[in-house]
Image 1 (cartoon, rainbow, N blue to C red):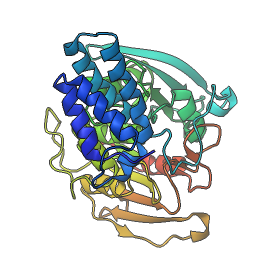
Image 2: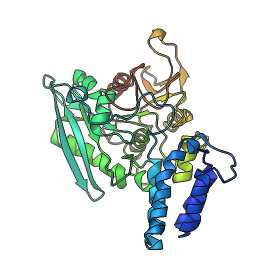
Image 3: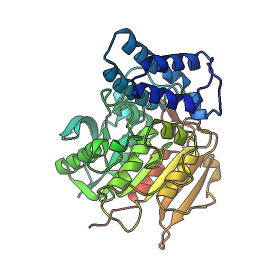
Amino acid sequence: MKPINLRDITEATQLTRGGRLNEAVALIQSVLRGGRPSGPETTAAADAAILLQPLELTVVDAVMTNVDKATAATAAPAALLGILGRLDTGLPGLRSLPRRGTPASADVAPAAGNYIAGSFTSAAGTRAYKLYVPSGGIDGPRPLIVMLHGCTQSADDFAAGTRMNFAAEEHGCFVVYPEQPLAANAQRCWNWFKPSDQQRDLGEPALIAGITRQVVSDYNIDAQRIYIAGLSAGGAAAAVMGEAYPDLYAAVGVHSGLACGAARDLPSAFAAMNGNGPARVGTRVATRVVPTSHAVPTIVFHGDRDTTVHPRNGAEVIARAGGEVQTEPEAQPTLGRFTRSIRRDSTGRSIVELWEIHGAGHAWSGGSAAGSFTDPSGPDATREMLRFFLEHARQSA
């Protein structure tokens, strides 16, 4: 299949929004059949070529079934935005394919604790979640880790792939996994690229924060030790949450994701995924953000052969976190094929870390083959994130 030009994607979007569905269909068909002259191509757009097939069918179906043009003009761009969520499927650079079926319970959580389902509802909507409750034996409030899955994943799949529940059990941590439903995104992706889902107390950020607060209310959680992490689209959403709720989260982990504000629509999202976003992302989320004197501590993992989300995005997350990092020699370099760069505070504690995983694609480093989108060869992102998180506690207001 011929690679798709970013310009063609933008033009097709404009045509459908203008109600010119026949022209949009003709353009998409021409591009998919290789009949349209190409201009400069982007890797992300080329990777996404197969993902435009659902869009073509959506627009054609709207025309063939005589759906009202105003309705179709609204629905078609939504479908186009929906395919953006497929950051994690059908693209090169992956070390494992999505699993078929549900992971075995033994791969999801240790038997010592409880793994339960919950739900949160507010004016922003409803989201289900899974919660790991660690076993007893530790007195006092415990840390909470919020984990945001990638596209096409479920809470169970993400838990099995990262093995975060097993690491959390060792440290007495709660872990909650909000789930994105198909109704919100056709590929279960967090809508990190939509302005309505990038702001405090609106859309998905409000729902994720609501789940966090509900768990804090229901269990003995240390409010100063709440952390959030995610993979790919979930990593981008975690970056949003760190900026929108610095009064809630003590540290952020972003694996193969993008910086908050890296995109505002479909064309800019493809550009950012391809590494063609702004040299440095602009101002922080300004709407109703609690002021802070410093950025939330942030740890980033990114494979240097990631062809789905360009590795440059990892550096952008670090820049957004306000960090100038320095590469540090590893005490045991044989343990991993990576370069770690760190920014430390006056006490020597790391407050920003960038792990560049050499030879890795778009996958959770050190993850288990029991889940999707994992690279078992390491280093172990789960344990390093947890180590980083537990070094940080949010200061009381």
